[in-house]
Every structure is written in structure tokens, then in C-alpha cells.
Amino acid sequence: MSISDPNQISEQYQSVLEKIAETAVKTGRIPDDIKLVVVTKGHEVNRIRQVIDAGAKRLGENYAEEGIGKINQLKEFSGIEWHMIGHVQSRKAEMVVQNFDIIHSLDNLKIAERYEQFAGQWNKKIPVLLECNVSGEESKFGFSAWDSNNWDKLLYEIKEILNKPHLDVCGLMTMAPYFDEAEKARPIFQRLVEFQKFLKMNIPQNPWKELSMGMSSDYSIAIEEGATMVRIGQAILGPRNQPKG
Image (cartoon, rainbow, N blue to C red; front, side, top):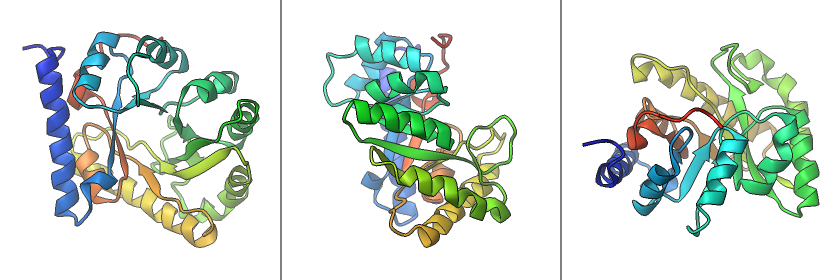
């Protein structure tokens, strides 16, 4: 049976939900406090329809044009929340603000200023997460938060972002490197939690509620460490078979 079979997609989706709930209960958390974002990057619209039919309400895309194309093709579904989870170039900020419901990947003050400009023009307040590089990988975007000695230096930019009236800074996001063993990702998630605690202490007026971390290979570890959003594609939809748009 192909992963594109709607029954299998539904089964995979339910299996992930069950694993999320089991992990939450095991760690003394409430399953409903953890949001599943189904990553639809690189998947055909018909396959996305199948996962929506299975119950998915939060869909994540990495590329603006590809995501907007899907948003336009899936307008028959109500109540879908579209998440921008990939790096956004400044010139694409307006289309992201117009079309997406939440941005996980706000990674610098410049793009925050662009989002603020366009959110103001469109008279909307957009939820955002600050993407943090807590692994030290040069290939990763995000605020340089892998070294706690650098955290104080990040406060100025973060406070500037918090002062923007059309941006609702809900929390933090990170991407762990891919490891052959999921357990190796645990210190990465722990570091993001430590940075969250630092921000709560130094900027207590912001709740810093959301932690977007964990993907198909390591989401159980992320939940054990406090994730409130997990971004899962392959474990539900199978391998991507479509290049970025």
C-alpha cells in the first residue's frame, strides 16, 4: 500500500497523534497542550487533502510561493491554519504576512521590521516565533543562542521586536540537526528551554509560551523536553516527491 493511500495517511496521522498523547501523559503533560503541525512541503495537493480529511488543521510550509499556491488550491477547507516554518527573504515578507496565519521562523530584526510594515498595512496582528540557532550549525538560520554567554547581547534586538504592535511574539522555535539517534537531539531542545527561561526572567512581560521544536525523527524527545508545537511531515505523509516551488 502506498503512503499516498488516504487510509494509510489517516492511519499515520492518528498514530502520530497517539504517540504525542502517550508521550505527553508519560511526562505529566496535557496532550491537548501540544499542537501538531503537519509539514506539507514538497507534497501534492491531493495528498494534503487526504491529511485534512483525516483531521489535520495546522499545515506547515517552508517556501512562500509553494505554500501560497497550496493555500489557494485548498480554499474549500475552512478552519485551516497555515504555518510558515522556513526562512523568509525580505522581499517575500509581504506575501507571507498576507497569506499565512503564524510565522515560526522570525530570525532577525530586519525581517521583523518588514513584517511589522506589512502587517500594519493589512491591519492584522500576526503571531510569530523567534527562530533560535541553539546547535551552533553554520547552515542554520536564527538568533545565535547556542552560547549562553551571548544571550545578553540578544536582548536589545528581541526587545525591539517585542515593541512592534503588529507582531505577537508567542515563543521560540528551533531545528535540531539530524541525528542517527533521536536521543542526541535532547541537549538541543534543553538549550532552547534554557533560553526560554532566560527570556522569561529578563523580559517577564512577554509570556514566551510556545516552543516549536521536534520533527518526525525526534518529536517524542522534544515533547519530553517541553515542546508545545511539533512539526511532522514524513512520519505522516511519507517522503517528499515534489521539488520546492
